[in-house]
Image (cartoon, rainbow, N blue to C red):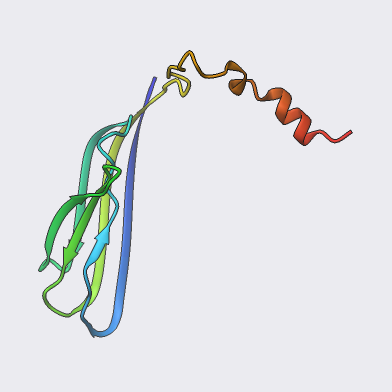
Length: 117
C-alpha cells in the first residue's frame, strides 16, 4: 500500500531596508538514503540573482549553500515535494549471534519501571 504526499514549504523574509545577507545554508532536500520514493522536488529562491552550491554533510544530507552578491529587500525560499510513502517493517534488520536476545523484550522492564505498586 502506498500513499502519495505533496508538500509545499515557504519561508519569506522582508527587511525594512536593503540588507546584505550572509551565506545562507538551506537544508530542505530529502537525503538520498530515504526509504520514500521522491517523485518530484523543486527549490525556488528569491531574489533571482544568487549563486547556489549543493554540498553534502557527513551524514549524506544535502545542503544548498546560497550566496547573494547584492543587498536585498526580501528573501524567499519555496520547496515543493511529491513523494510516495510505502509501508515498511521497522524491525527488518539482523542481530549478531553474539548479542543477547533479551534486549528486544522490554515489556517486563517497562512494566517494572512504570508500574509502582
